[in-house]
Amino acid sequence: MKYTIFLCVGLVFSLFSMETLSAQVSVCEDDSFSISATGNNPSTSYTLTYVLVCGGTVTTTNTTGTFDMSTLGVSAGSSCTVYAVDHDTAEDFSTWPTPVSSCTSSISQAVTVTAACTSLSVCETDVLTISAAGNNPSANYTLSYVLVCGGSVTSVNTTGMFDMGALSVSAGSNCTVYAVDHDAAEDFSTWPTPVSSCVSSISQPVTVTAGPCSTVSLAPKVFLQGPLSGSTMATDLAAATLIPTTDPYDGSKTATTAVLSTMVDWVWVEVRDAATGTMVLAAQPGLLQPNGCIVDTDGSSALVFPLAIGSYHVVVKHRNHLSVMTGSPVNLN
Image 1 (tube, rainbow, N blue to C red):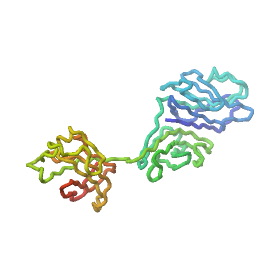
Image 2: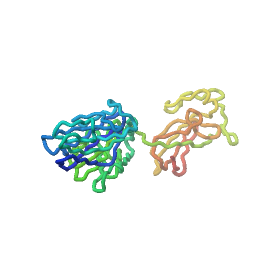
Image 3: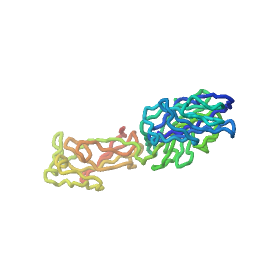
């Protein structure tokens, strides 16, 4: 995960003081993160310095608030703290968190370093769910979720659920979900730049993939009059090597001679709508076994269709037999 952390506090200190902003947050060991605490600077005559302390030792300091954990060699499992320090004179940061300057104020943010970052994937018609309830530092804060795709805010809610299909987020889009704690009204149209006076945020990159988003498996069973003898069907076509290695319907599948040697023939399987049975939603060739089961070209697997779980009519066709269809819709999963 990639985490961006915004810190703020509305206090002005005349002597040294320290405040911890929020609950502990996390950053991946191969990522960078940023701290913004400009609201803590009581005067333009003060210098605002950021100090990263890991394992009780000062790792680095800067005035930008950006820390690249991979460059700094901070490993997973490390417990760190970032101090945003206002100081009116030179400060010996090697002593932190003990100040040296006579006039210093500081706020801090605890940070846990986790294993390498990963981007979540969601299908373009699926629902993405994010939960970051543990990031809310106070009951006085509101936790909002912001979906940003292609640099623009796509949606904002307090549930963390985003229907990518309803939002028309297309495959290939690079998105980020921000889980934002805010103590005042926030103009989310500006995200990821905060407006509220006191905000903390973590973020999760999301990659949107192409459909089909869900599939159903189907292994129908039929018998062909002619090859049927008792409870099984003969494999005369296979014995005469008359079954083509490529299916004779749309040419989309091939099978090995070893698999074909145990089959009756190729068949065509359609999945149709439940309401009328006239609309073909998905179709593909399959291989008919002597026991009547229709399988894929490996000789054992069920056929897989890019459809949502639900009820459908199923049609089976053969090149020299009449087609058959289920008398009523059947549930596929």
